[in-house]
Length: 437
Image 1 (cartoon, rainbow, N blue to C red):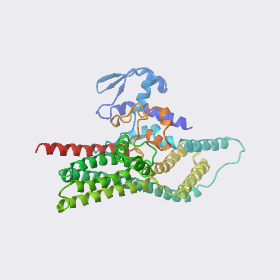
Image 2: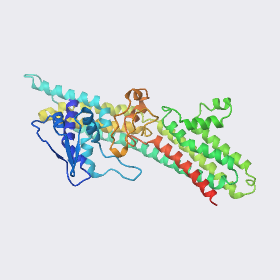
Image 3: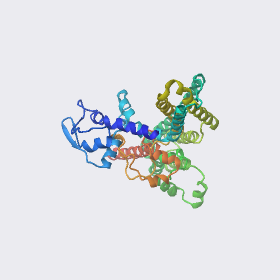
Image 4: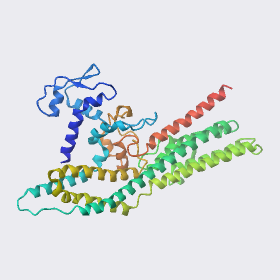
């Protein structure tokens, strides 16, 4: 049944493909060679080889790969975070026709299929003569619907609160890294250049170390973090003793040590009160990084209580599973599509709560793919991954590998790389400005 639903949605997508491809122009797509005598979509694609877009003719090759590319091009519009572009109300059509490509739909497909088959069985049994009517009053679902709605609202609200808290922590971390970079290059470097250089190396590695902690060790530690730790934990005994600590914690200690060495390196630290104040402020900033690490660990390693999640799941399963028995007497053959739509939205809301409960899985980790999709192409290339390599990932990283940035959480890997690059740019800028004096 679910396959039939997906096929129907694909038919709608292909039927309105011309409108989608011409969404940025005033003229719609016109299909030539319209010698189509039935509604078979495959035959339609074989016949329609030319598409006119605002007067320009484009040729579509007759191959299954071309059909797949067309299908993948019909995606919901993606927000461009860097340029400030957000979702728009006129994206409703793209959002609707891209439903078969929904990651949430794939996640709930088994539960949705089970409810659909159960509904189909109830409808078939109703057609058997003299078979007892499997009907129950609808009043029970009306009474329990409000309770279920409250449970789902609380579930998604609590998950989104974790997402927003995580975003605030990373925003604070970015601000702290900027402050430290500016203070080190402006105030520490002039009188303690060696310690300042070491501090900047440690600070550049911190965002990736924080990303590693947010992913709970599911991903490999970044190579630049490994190099920095190997460089500044000189003895094997020191490296072994710090192995049980989070890499971000070790980097925080090494940054404190760098500030201590900077005070020793400087000949004026004991007499210049302004220099002492700057060292104190940078110490407080390092403590803020440690606070960010603790906050990320709290979010990543504290789930919503299992009893609440299970109770919500059980109630939702019973409510949706018995819904066909309550509707079959009033809706008849319309029961099946109503059940499919209702279950899709209700189960999808619950699944979204599960997904964003771990808010740090927002982009791909490492290089498990053969082609990185471009967000500006509305997700073309999402399905071009090397599936064999994805299967070797942990379940958490598999979830990230099948989605795009910001789909189900914060893209912490991309954010960490952006912070690292920004710290490096601040260092280069300061050195350039100093050399021009």
